[in-house]
Image (cartoon, rainbow, N blue to C red):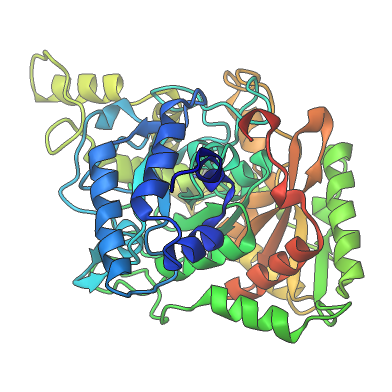
Length: 509
Ligand code: GLN
């Protein structure tokens, strides 16, 4: 690659396009990696917590060797970066917390291995890791302002949050510092930052990706998923991430890996024509379109739905009557599980240890007080409270019962429709600091993502236009269990007909 204009275009290419160029050997993985690393070096968004050029270039060289030997697998040599809750052998892993400052895992998370050099004795997809991405501490938050290291700025407006908790992943993809990133979604952390930064992201059905090596927040909800610019790119990534991991995550589903991208391309070729989505019934929950949603967001979402009608889909009204309860239910269950998961950070086995202490109890107390930030501490306290004797039945058990009813409501809705659609977030991205001192204001903003998380359903965010302040708005698509391919297909058809996903923040062209 000699022409600088050609190489400066590399960051405009998505995963599928980069993969094609690499496979045609028009560019090497080392060249692509160097290009993105140079861009990352200049970033002022706070998106990255760690990079290591030597490690990335060594991975790129290994990918180039596989390409030179004639291997042609879809992701080989394409770079990405991981949310810093996935443990990595070659980079530090902090989970956005001081508790894990400088922590180095002895192994790679299953998802990291599958996308990278390999996992469980199987060769990996051969993607190159560019570094680790900033996030809210232990993935707790909606604005990335709970990171112990630095906030992340939204590339569309540097004074605004990029969403959370996968805010670094979203900002890095939106600013074209990486072609794709991993994220995790416990109650919306892939979909909401994707929506607020104008990118595409999918949270698969609970259990579809192994959680092994993901720093645990709320184990019955946590799921990994890809964030990229298009549904096609997400399909490519997701194909490399899913699959059972029976020895290491007993909640990973015993379903074979699926080639979502090939399925998606085949389906769209078959359905080519004026109405490719003919027969698709899209359910609109009345509770998602009420007064709680800002008018600018609703206007963009309705515009996207009108486009879906043009593509042949029909819109039907459905009801998810317990939507409001998803907030209290989630904010009982998630902290309960978090309080248990975070008990391992005691300053003994790993994690921050206070410099001086009088006895063992004092050591626990000081280490945990120093290591955890305000939000993690708040959740440990709430979780411990709702699990304690006398309150367990009143809060935790009741929340579990309502969780089941919420899941049932979705099944009722799915008798009337194939996909459920609505907003992802009730507003566009807010100003950094605006909700920092108000945890409840953050919790309320999760209203449209929590219920499907509690039900374990797949969901995605698709760029659908712009709202107040010229900020991006995402359309949420929720599918029934294991219907990732259907969601990706519906998003892909929309992206063939619209170009919201191609818009980019002016300062990062
Ligand atoms: N915003 C939600 C929370 O703070 C969801 C976070 C997530 O999905 N990791 O818990």
